[in-house]
Length: 310
Image (tube, rainbow, N blue to C red; front, top):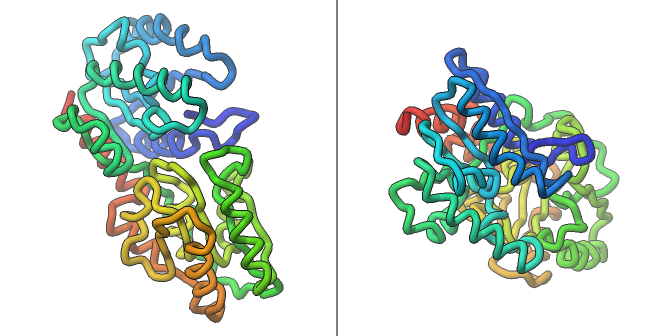
């Protein structure tokens, strides 16, 4: 999970977390990136590479992001502690059944060799209950300096609804999103913005222009785009996946829908879009700060985990 040339936001939250941790003067970071998207063989190649790197270097800790990236633990146990962050795709079916079974089985075996397991939501805590002593719930943070509300007066010509993700990914449930937009289009002049293959600047600019972000996903871990929209104080309507219920609890103009039916999403969306533009805001930024989910706050929490196992 790390950005590559043909997928510039792939694992961007991992990259940003690493940069935030490395910004502390007493922390030095070296990245070993396993590009599994380019070649699945790279996971197997990493076994020997990581072993050699750890023997040669003077490291205090290994922090792995994503389950099967720690494949080396099935063949070699380092003398230094290993912390792993699971990002949900290892535990939930997002692709084919065989892929899901293989990833989950390997991940479950890998966890035995770790000192701490960072997860993103309560359901992941439940799934990994037998590792209770190792578990830490700590979603990735959001850069509150970069993502913030734009107070410029908008020119209202249409209502902008954001779709958070690549519509080609089945778990993003673009079919439901389309059904809802088609129904809303009978009442409102709607324009859709798809948050896919964008630079960070484009993500921020598009978030700031939104009237509402609508997530129709079937499964999520702790979606960054939701937290980034919260940082910009944008209204959000989402299916009840991942940690979204926690994130949006008691947040103004934000709704969590316990259904995958279009009718259930249309009602809260209409309530938001029918308001005057000056009222079409949330207090999501304040909620993120209260939850300790600013990127710097999370970096400090990760460092605390490191210090507990070193």
